[in-house]
Image (tube, rainbow, N blue to C red; front, side, top):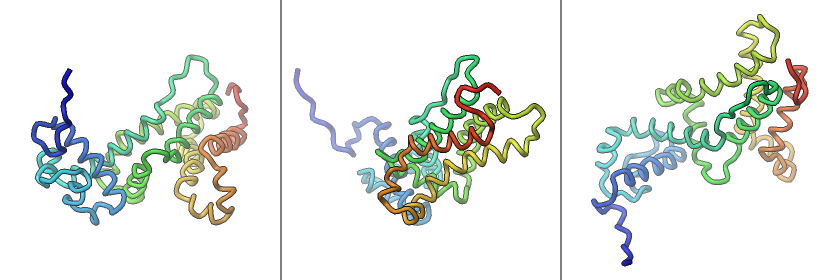
Length: 222
């Protein structure tokens, strides 16, 4: 069998999807570093190895659409790391909550391969525009709904919605702070200790703390 030499990145015979995917990946990295206003279409094309800047308009129609696609792509990639758990009937809510927290922490702290994804999401979600609003609507709300359902199993019947929201935000806030506050935490406790705050140990601490606050232990029924 004869070998086929790979085509150059800009050869028109390459699959369109390959160019589109490279533009999307490059856009995420460039926007994460420079922000929407600081990045240009040419920056993205250079990072993707695409010479014709018209490719952005061809695939995405505008810089704004490319940015929104990159933000959504980043969130999908993070979700893919921690797919929603499927619990068999009768699973205690304490087990569900522990697993939910573990997934949330891992998605926020696990930067082993693609740290740009969380940097881009943090940029956008700190002051959500249309792209951030779409991510909240299509991705964050469904994830939040899983936590809401778990808390409804745990809390007494008739607990008002405001209280459920505050408890949910308290749990998520613990997870989130280990992401946005880690530079400050590193300065406070020192790099040697902070390096021990890996996703698994952080998730375990938050789970124990939250379960205790709710009066639950691992495996407990409401």
